[in-house]
Image (cartoon, rainbow, N blue to C red; front, side, top):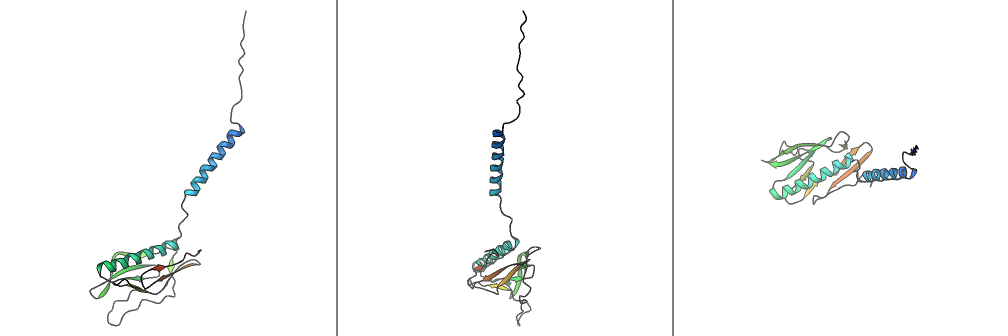
Length: 164
């Protein structure tokens, strides 16, 4: 007597529609989480205004602590912190800070003036040892966007983002 056994070979392979939908949902959820945690691209104009604000605040604090007046010489492409040393304005350590390729100061601002009794030009922004500041408003420009920076007599720097 011969017995033959029949094994059924199933050709069912792959994924069901439900499994595919669950996998797609999990991938979409992960992509959404990654997108939500990414930082937005930084605006160079706002970065320049924030850095200038931070540097002015730090220089005012330095003037108060050390008793040495501080200032900023502003150019079209950046600025340099200066200190009042030996009866003249001397560049401070740290070098010139540049705004970047696409950010510059408005070209209509007045040039740095030179006092009559010295040959050293006056800084565009002066921060004295009593905690007061003096400086004309500055306008940062990038393409068609602008940010107007205003320096209050107490040293506070105010500005608004272009899309605010």
